[in-house]
Length: 451
Image 1: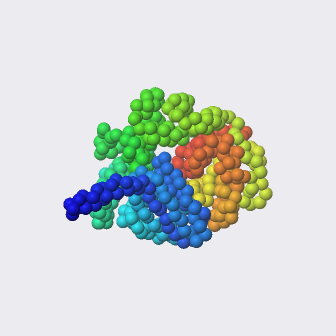
Image 2: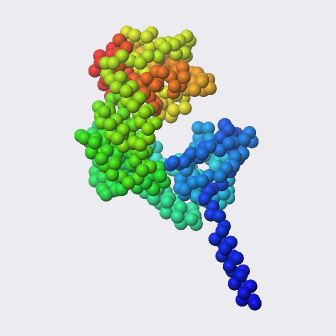
Image 3: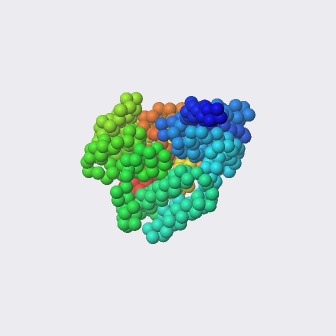
């Protein structure tokens, strides 16, 4: 009888285990001190979910995700974290010191507190980007090896028990190292003010046989994603026949990677790119997203109208920081160098000292320097204050509808800073002019005889 009862009990346990529903979601909750909006956004490859944040800064929701790295954003700040099914993750942070106050509790907190600390560690210990990439090749290679070793030691010292996560982080660190190698040539040319830099075999050898078509890696690692995008963008730029590269892309058995790459290559369709037609035809043949293809066609038609010598799109009655309104028509008779920027744009602000220097050199000459802010209306005071605080010169204008401004859309501007040069008759010299920090800008001015 005891045997029968025991067998019956075991049977109940087995049946109960089989009927227990599999958890296919993660729980994400938290409290945000000094919230700056009413939502938090969690995003990843093929994933985007908004979570409501109440007035007290409290939020909670379930996320049906595949295991991997995601980002959450609140206001203009964001952070990377790791999610897998079964996590019950609770976040606390203060927007006054966003990254410094991120703390996790609950299931999954060990891995994610490591990621939060890792970000601060890298911020404190990583080399200054301009200094790093201005280094000569032997010095640069040693510097990034030190960075890579430092990251792996930081991981080893974290005493994380999740072996799968440790393996992911080691792979992530290796892709970070390769990305530094890949970026060196272009970044060194920019920061060291050199042209046609040739890199040694130490930079190219690690990429022999490298797999640029791994869908899982593309979805999981930001550095791998950049490696792939940089590779194909450069391959198309350097190829005498871009159709060969598009044929290679067709053969990739990775749908997410392929569609994402196709959309990324859309940014290479620019007014100064002589391969726009090849790019357009190749992207249209590869993409399966009809909405994207419609937008791409609209952009392509606009870009064709931005060739050198074409009549420039115009802006009308933009508010002038010094008072009144200014239109492009008011500036006819002089060259006009337009800087499209915003107060929140880091790369834009890094150009300010260079722009001041160039503007001072050409003060009183046959050129006007126009900085057009595309800040949103709610950031109007931030624009007014920054122009005053940084003593910005030239003509400082506030666009009428930020990104939706007709001038911005007519110039097919998808990222800033963007610089445009218009001749005294109102025609385009270049719709994608060199930045103030690029010596080629002064070369262009001299070539045009601006004086």
